[in-house]
Amino acid sequence: MPLYEYKCSACAKSFELLVRSSTVPQCPHCGSRQLEKLMSSFSQGSPALTSTFVPPGTRGHPDN
Image 1 (tube, rainbow, N blue to C red):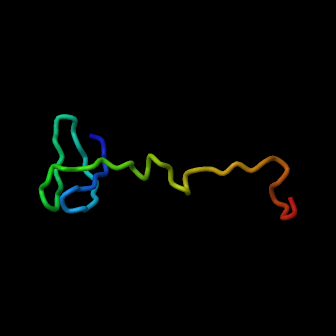
Image 2: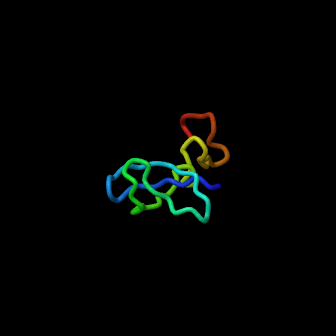
């Protein structure tokens, strides 16, 4: 079951749900089914998980 992030259009709460393909998700706060699927922060890439390119020869010396 995939984990999805949603924002409820009725109460504006954000939450995560494990959802089967046959299940119609609903807000755990108000019960509404008017949900917006959000882009997962994991799928966008966390700064801790992404790398920064450092050109060769520029590491370790503050003047480079």
